[in-house]
Amino acid sequence: MSRRIVIAAVLVVLVAAGAVFAEVCLSPYVKRLAGPEKFLYVSAVDADGRDNDFLAVVDVSLASPTYGRVVHTLGLGSAGNEPHHMGWSDDRTKIWLGALLSKRLFIIDVAADPARPTIVKTIDDISAVTGLHGPHTYYALPGRMLLTFLSSADGNPPGGMAEFTNDGELVRVIKNPVDSPYAYDVAVKPDVNRMITSSFTALRNYRKPLSQWDMKDGGNTLLVWDFKERKVLQTLTTDPVPLEVRWSVKPGRAYGWTNSALGDSIWFFGQGKDGKFSTKKVADLGKGCLPADLRQSPDDRYLYVSCFMKSEIQAWDVSTPDRPRLHDTVVAGVSPNMMHVTGDGKRMYVTNSLLSTMDYSEKFWVRLVHIGPDGRLKVDPFFDVDFTKFPSGSARAHDMLLN
Image 1 (cartoon, rainbow, N blue to C red):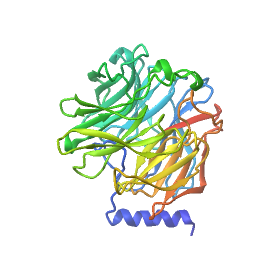
Image 2 (cartoon, rainbow, N blue to C red):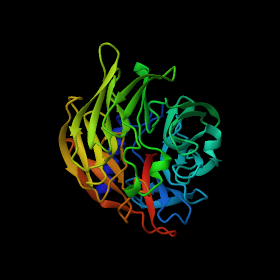
Image 3 (spheres, rainbow, N blue to C red):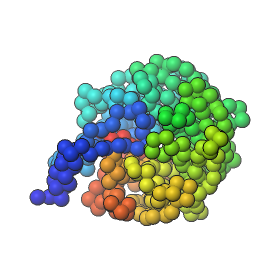
């Protein structure tokens, strides 16, 4: 019996025994998977910008004869979009996928046939609808989607947020305040009625080759919001360009972390007894590391950081939340970027494209890192999905969702 079939059998037993698959780094309003993942959806940018961008479907069902292969691609019908992040609707029937260079946004149905998703709606000019450009984070709310945008419609700050129904009808637009105009990620902690947004840079900057970027044209703030009122309560500062917002998954715990891309650091944010939030730098990741993504283990024990320029993934023990300790490192390949940790905390899928203006590797892939009971990381030598050999040529593998 193969190792793959044995692992699959063990996962089936765990599901039957009532094991919890609590995916982290998703909105708490998203319906959770009832068992192990079967498909991995990957947003893919045509590498030379000449052919259509697409969504790739990778078979990740261990017992499947096509395990570890791209089994379907959903063409987006156009090129030059720079499809980037994506997110589930709260009922997990639709994927929202947008673009950082074009103004297109795609709503994709996965409920009818998870192996062969279909586009059910394309918004051709999201800027005309919202007055904003560059949707980044797609965050599910009950019956709605909350999107962050990196810029205003003209490509300059301020960015902001827009709220839609699950079918793509605009509900409202919220611009960033004048004194904190940069936007990036958003995450909500419903049980404490707080929402935090972070800050990157605008289209006017990121559309240029990295060597031409103005490194001062970016944010260094986290905004603390009253979630129900959608009102800014505080402006917090960090090292330049705090990216991902990761709340503690423990109920009632009003603290979390962010990764500063230009500060090569992890910052802790937390609420004091007076109800006010503060920030502090809690980890140095190494000079020139460029921490691009930040993920958590389902038990809140570890943070995982992808060091895009250093080509390693770091695991930090955050048992003491404001005093992280480096636990392990692993090299999955050149320039790791996006990570996705499975609901049981035992596997991490990794891609290696950040932006077409920033990538320095010519080979793009999806790889798998196993996470042991001791928190140690090990690259799977047999799982290596090559994104350089599509009929249209090479594609940049970026964000991922599991189903």
